[in-house]
Length: 131
Image (tube, rainbow, N blue to C red; front, side, top):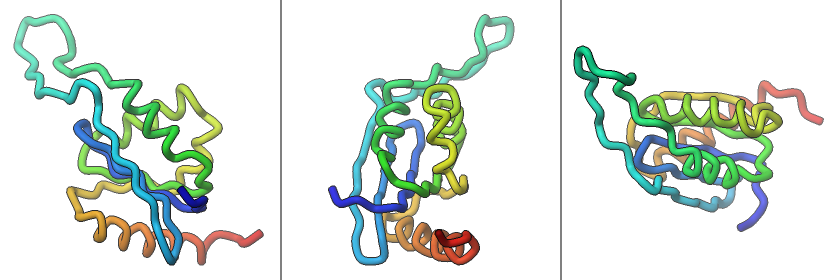
């Protein structure tokens, strides 16, 4: 895998895609949790929150895949991107500086997600002081 400064993560509870990219190319890694989420419904007078626990191994694999990218955009349709942020804060707080944005994005094609991320970072790069 080539070294890229930018990465976009698309994550839900069934799959995570990490794209490392620049203007010319990209690398993609896909992860699946070991035990995909099933929908849990909370019932009256029952113990527990009605939510499945987060898969820390899954989230950790995604964080490791971000690797040495300097700028990361987190995307996804639901709460998994927030769970990923909480995981980073708890287990690798130094990586929080890499996260430049969090956006709700439904289920785009890989090409559409990459196009969105390139446009996002183009605008972000224009606004960021250059070193």
